[in-house]
Length: 183
Image (cartoon, rainbow, N blue to C red; front, side, top):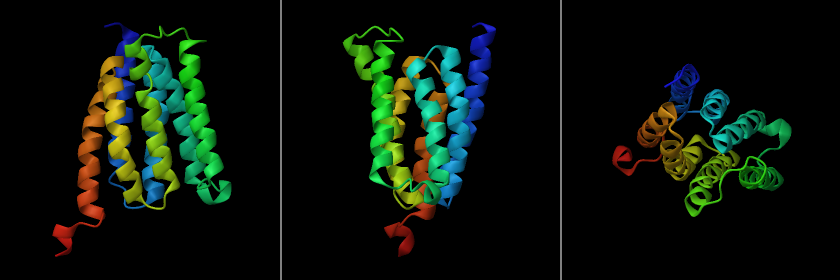
């Protein structure tokens, strides 16, 4: 492993910390703020590893988090924002195979679409009203990112998604309606 890969892995582990902690936030703004820092660092992590779509989607994720952090000012919970972000994710997917010259094998077409699914799921979670909704959408997005991260070789991102899934479940038990806890 060369020094760039080592730096990438260290940045990924720091990013992982922000994302894992985010799902423990009781307030939606806390979840979004922590995910903002995680996305910014993961964009660097992926780009250093040569995982272009992961890097660019995380740059868009950072922008998305800023917009949703100030959701009232930007009216971010409106459908045009969802459509704009969805279109940008799909555009990045297409650019990945055209401009960035990723080979369009069946495997690559599927694996490279997984982070798009992850981004869309979290985007929908951000549009909804509660941290519970973000956690539910995380149950869709996190497994999609996990598979992509394994292929991309980002240790921090792999560990992040494994812990994120655990953190989502713990957050659900702690903060969301729980029939066992409510009795």
